[in-house]
Amino acid sequence: METGTFRGFEVALHDPGIGLITFNQPDRLNGMTQGMKRDLVEVLTEAQMDDAVRVLVLTGSGKAFSAGDDISGRPLDGSTGKQLVPDIGRGHADPIGTYSALRAISQRLNTTVRDLDKLTIAAINGFAIQTGMSLALSCDFRIASEDARIGSGTLRFGLMPDEGGQYLLVQLLGVAKAMDFLMRNRIVTGREALELGLVHEAVPSGRLLDRALELARELAEGPQVAMRMLKRSIYNAAETSFAGALDDIAAKTAVTDHHPDAREGIAAFREKRKARFNGG
Image (cartoon, rainbow, N blue to C red; front, top):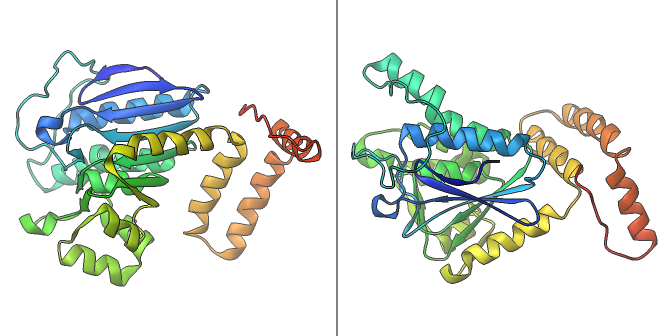
């Protein structure tokens, strides 16, 4: 995975195989442009294909994770950031253009995150609104600062949670609570998000990144092949029958049972030591 400064974000790689993506436009609350989203998709695709990357952490700088789409029209600060993909038409000039732009650009960022085999952690440092909320909810783990602010807020403008937020909220909260959350334009703190079940942990803001990286190290040291297959089976189980889930996990177990990580795990248990999984 390429590291450095890109349009609207920075990428760093930490041992043992932790990719850290930091949105770096705090003056605009890390609002996202279409170009930034397409570059993020490219980086995420690189991470998927890079054996050196085991876990991804996404976070923001300043007061926001991401407060939504950047509609200011101003060019991104730090124009020296590398552009990974060429600019294309932004769409939205007419109904079919809006449909196309949502499906091909905005929604694709969230589907790319969800489709990664590698585990993802959203470290929600501040405002996570609309685009920011749906991106955070697309991640496998979410840790929020206690004073973060998380919500959709689109109805305030007569708009829709058009990047998949309604689906992700129904998955996490159920229909009744998702209805309340969206229809009443609720924006909750990190502590409230923990009570609702939107995030896994809420920590003091000064501890957020350290805690996210601590979790990332724990996950990165696990049996990567089994964990990636289990991740996919968990998401599949949410959308299939019991019989389908059983067949899915059996097919994946036929791979993982014969992987070197399984032999190492059994040997470590017998020898009463910590397993050293190779992640290959």
